[in-house]
Length: 225
Image (cartoon, rainbow, N blue to C red; front, side, top):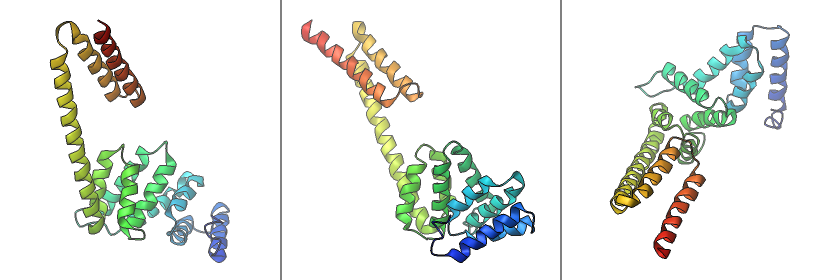
């Protein structure tokens, strides 16, 4: 915090003073958390992390912070919807707090156009690549320009996924047609390897190695038989 506020020493000292007041019960805690939210609203990632050091009764401060970030939602959504969405993202990244803090800052910056919107959306897409449902839901809470960019990216990703599925289905069909009878074990082994990968029981490196070994063994069989 001192590094962030190095050119605003008065604001930094004010924050320290509020912290002392909070823990020494010198002032109303609701007022203190509200003041903290106002002083640190340009650094929401720090503010979210800041509340981690507070006791449970300070949770209303984080709720106020989330409300700040969720204001000015689109007509089809409510502030409660936005806060609920943010909480869902926090839960999804419960074991990766750094990613949640980064997402939260991007969420705020994109909504209030404090950064390049296209660049911010690209980074959010990367953060949420393993949570496609959260990426789709995000669109409801963005300004129109950001909605158009994200909608286009989601459409492009969907088209890419469809093309990938078509290529995989075509390849599996050709594999099944090629390896019948005594060679059917090749097709079945490939399906087993692919299924284990899709279920998360095999890494992508293992997938490549085992399929490569399967194909290599098959090539040797045909070459020297």
